[in-house]
Length: 591
Image (cartoon, rainbow, N blue to C red; front, side, top):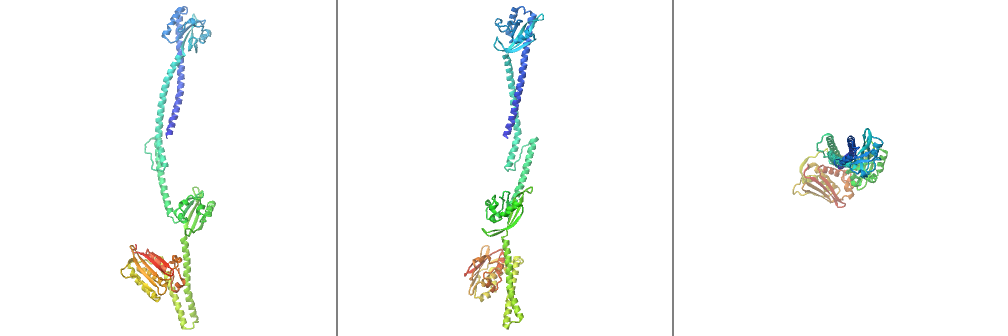
């Protein structure tokens, strides 16, 4: 803004100087011409006056008197008077000795009046007598109507120049004062103009630096006031829009950050312009290794870079699945679509990544579950059907064999009943169709009551059950029947997989906020590769032995769901040939 102030002041200064110079030359020319004309008129008047005196006084005939009379002019006036006879002889002069003066007939002003008979002769030239520039005016004087001589008046041009110089000095001083006043006025005017503009610029700079609270607080009238009002309105509107944009950006960032699906925006240069945390998690790469990187580098390991290229070049959508194997195996559902800007101009592509690993695993589990259920049902059904057909055909040789067949049919039907009962039970638990009846129960009492059912089977295998001591009760908030079902299934599983003469240890530990149940056996143990799948439905470590023992393969799955319904957790530790330990942690209180 200082430059604008200087420009305005400088421009006004140049304009003022130009105007004053033109005015100065114009006025000085007029004054010089006017003063010269006035001097000329003054010389003419004095010449005419002297001419009349000479004519009226008859001094033309009495040259001595004329010379004496003219000798007194030098004391009173600054003009030089010269009387010249018709033949050019100087008969009187106020400043020089006429004896030393030559004939003046050849002088321009004398030649004009005496030779060419003009009324006035004038010239400005160098004086031969005084060796200086002089202005000469000559007029004739007459006697009886005839020209008898000429009167010449003259003055030094130096006096004219001095007078004009004095006038120029005064004029210059006046014009300088005018120029000074003009410049000061221009400076004040430009300052008053640029000061409010400077405030506007300061506000706009603050707005440029994202300080949207900047406002102009000065009151001005006219156009400056309207400008201030417009800038303030613009700043308020800009602040409102920026707040809306920031709020929208926060919402977008919040949405993108909390999306379980990965979102990636590819710009028209083929670089990643936007991503979210889910994408980082899927690709196991930090944002710095994704943002502003070529899509070939980012998505090359997924094998979808050719799909992105197709979307960008052909302006079509694409869908596919991609597999990742590091750091863990993942299956991603990939949707790629063109990205458009205003005017439907294609600017790149949008990629959406869905993690469908769990879905595929569940689909696999469902497929396996159907296969397992079919297999589990088919075996007893085939057995029942086969023995029933044998009995119906009458090919049974004796009653003992028939009774044996009927016993097999009964046992398989019991197995079918247990399988269907467990499936229904598991289905109800998963659907939460059986709400828990939470009460305060003694864990040791539940263990004692539940193990009575399984004690006969343990006794038949000569397995010793070691129950918790009855020293003090351990209370927990739980569904008594479901808690007993957890204990029963864990102990029954231990009995089934523990060899004869083995031991099963059941103990309860009370902690600050939870109760821990441990069921440890000395059975055959579980291979390490089977521990992660142990709680899956129909999964068996030793399928032949489990099926022979009458197990359905659903007991541990039921236990896991019942524990989780109580907001608890279940763990298993096992060593092959040594035994297994199942640990159940339940909170003391249910919220």
